[in-house]
Image 1 (tube, rainbow, N blue to C red):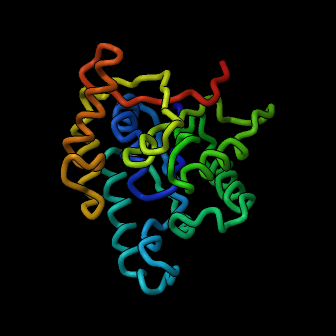
Image 2: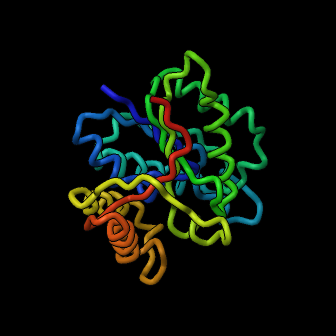
Length: 225
């Protein structure tokens, strides 16, 4: 059985970035675990006071578990680093966390953020994943893919996302949308990129690039065959 680890900065990134792909691959027999690095709330405050947001963090975590269960994820790891403040954490601490989860799960494939995202947490997550997955002889990870996150990837001009892998999600887009509805506080009205309508447009756009009805797009970071 092939194993996939998704390493994402915040709750909802995993669904936005590759929810349709995960739902499809799980149906095909892959095992998927998710690692979320940040707590996803406290950047709304000028000064981080975690205690002020404890209840909201708890509710968001419940939504995270529900969304991942909906698409069939086996296990969810959550660290709870400060939201949009990963640059305040020693990079080595983030790398070690990823290594610990990776050593326990031993994935063959990793999905993570695109290096050129606007969001600083996404950039750091990408860098930490690459460092944690150095291609030494005993490394189990043979493939690394980066995904886009609407309202982050496309807003960082001129670092344009140029995918070279496209996954047909025509049969699992609805599962992705339903899973994202679990994050009801993150849903927006169209034309915001995080609206249901926009997410469908994104899927249709990438699908049209390669002759499919709907697709999710990825950039290969590393593939060892």
